[in-house]
Amino acid sequence: MTTQMHLAAQYLAAAGISFIEKKQDDSHTNLGFSIESESLFTRPLNADGVILSLSYALFTLEWIGNNATKRLQLDGTSHAQVMQWINSMVIDSGFEKAYSYDLHYELPYQITDDYVFKLQDASRLKKLIEYRKLAQLAIQEFLKTNRFDSEIRIWPHHFDTGAFTTVDTSSGVSIGLGLAIPDSMCKDYYFYISGYRGHDGLDTNTFKSLIKGKWYNDGFKGAVLPISGINKTDAVTFFNEALIAYTN
Image (cartoon, rainbow, N blue to C red):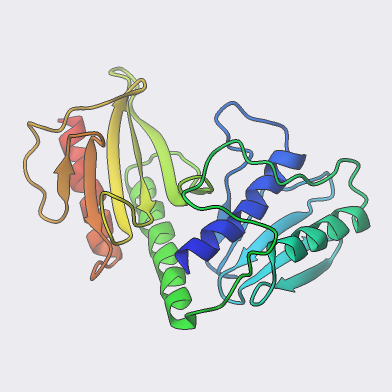
């Protein structure tokens, strides 16, 4: 289900690429997450505030605007049919530009016109909702407690929930933190935090061991905490403990 939601999220990213002014940091492509509606959503795509949303709860794409919501059920729907539906929504909403599924980054899997979305495991999808909610709430609390200012966004390329903020303006130290999907570093969803000075990752070799989580310094320089068995308090504690290491 992670793969299917990652692929489905690309329709939202492509909408950002198609209709939103390009930003150097690629933030026109990133997505918000609503705890209330259990869905991902784009930034406004036009002056009327139209957005394209992906519901985890319903496994649907949602075109929201003009005081109406139109839904497309993904289960049993092909990529070609999704494209046809989005294009019809764009035309019906009077967009001047056309929708283009033209990503400027590579995904670890391909999608073709005959690819069909399948709701293979509803219980797993429910678990993925819990993960996104936990990440959103834990990052919110960490930022608020430490008086840091950052958006919390889902980046469609790596599909992580992430935030980025300056920690110390005098030293130029900043941190990136969030929740990543399983990859070569961890087979589970995992929380991460890493420190930077400019574009360079900060060395973690001299940092003390964490109560929960583990420091990495080869390739990825930062700390990782697998999500299994972790609650919000654990996640916030992990972020705060790592922050102390970066600021001492």
